[in-house]
Amino acid sequence: MFNEDHASKYGLKEAVVLHKIIFYVLINEKDGRNFHKGQYWTFNSREGWRNVFKCFSYEQVWRSLKALEKKGALVSDSFNRRAYDKTRWYSLSDSLVKEAKGSEYWQKAIRNSAKPKRKTAITDRKTATPIPLDNNIIQEIKPY
Image (cartoon, rainbow, N blue to C red):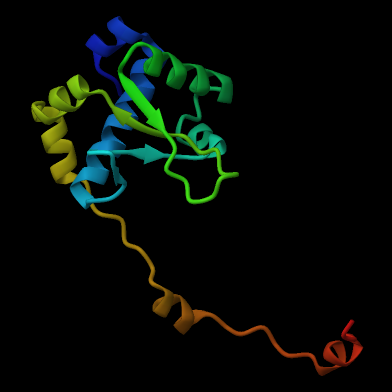
């Protein structure tokens, strides 16, 4: 899905990408996640974005994100904990945040979105089976 006005203003591929980013940013706001520098953000790895937009090549997605940023629809930054992590974070321009929050479509979409169920470490531990201990392997390991 996409907004026809966004397609006219930014391009068709860019409108499709923007539609999904608006959704992710508004969901993060609803759930109180990824708040930095006074706004909500979404992020994904390069392969992750490719999986979100399966109808586009990686290059098409990347060019669309860059075009949206250049045209002022998106802002990007990095809030990664590790310096080697080059994942880009994206948020909406102030005008798009205002537009989305004033939109009946987005209000309904976010209100009706279900929060994903997450497994906790405790539930994972209950179902996980330990790796069997092999005493023969332990005897073969020699300390340095």
